[in-house]
Length: 211
Length: 105
Image 1 (cartoon, rainbow over the protein chains, first blue to last red):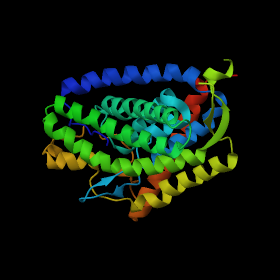
Image 2 (tube, helix red, strand yellow; image 1 turned 180 degrees about the vertical axis):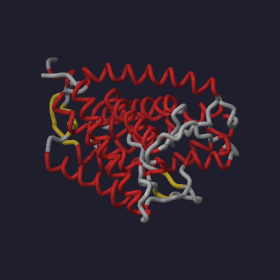
Image 3 (cartoon, rainbow over the protein chains, first blue to last red; image 1 turned 30 degrees about the vertical axis):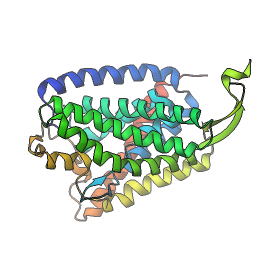
Image 4 (cartoon, each protein chain N blue to C red; image 1 turned 60 degrees about the horizontal axis):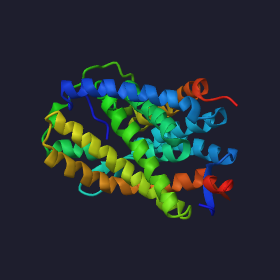
């Protein structure tokens, strides 16, 4: 789901470049406190894994393929701000070294996958854990990943419509439909990776610890 | 909320992260040439809704466009090598940037 150069109108890519740069800059600032030194090697490795996994397009229905996005996985492991930084770095490397995703569309891609994707994934994961009282982490991870990629695709649909590429009434259901399917793959990969890379610890809930 | 609630912490197991590193290199270097070449979700929508033609390259400075290293006769090697380079660059870039950013204890 990388928007190439040309899809977005000049107004839209200018605005999203400014907004995307501001959001990425703010995410960098927040990462200063959100990420601790001992987490750095793991976060770097997770970013490399997300890059590699994104290369592996898997076929879905109707002659179409999808690929892993990773925003939800990064957010589950390192929180939404560090995830936004990791995903922005992936997008920058892809656009600059591999011509995957446009340069003028970089801000838009950062907003949709790095920002919307990370925060939607993080929100759903946390809400899911709370709802399920910490059980069934797999279900929370799957839902987080599915919502994250579908939300990112809605963002892309909105920008396409604003750019006059296609009316929202056509772009939104089309993007949503395909990414609801791709989201199943996203959910399965995220579920497996999050289960493998996290450890369950039973501790008093923070609110209750001193009550 | 005076209840015991399980929490999930990122694993500190070196073995697990080593497994992820091996998986990363295998995905980028070995599996990537066999990825599906079908259009992805956005490309498919662009085809169906007739805006695929809007795509217009504005630069040609990417050293490995389309995830291929130029000048190698085998496609699988062109793609696999590009994947390996990308994965290593990703890890080094993030490690350097995050090490400069993250809080010290």
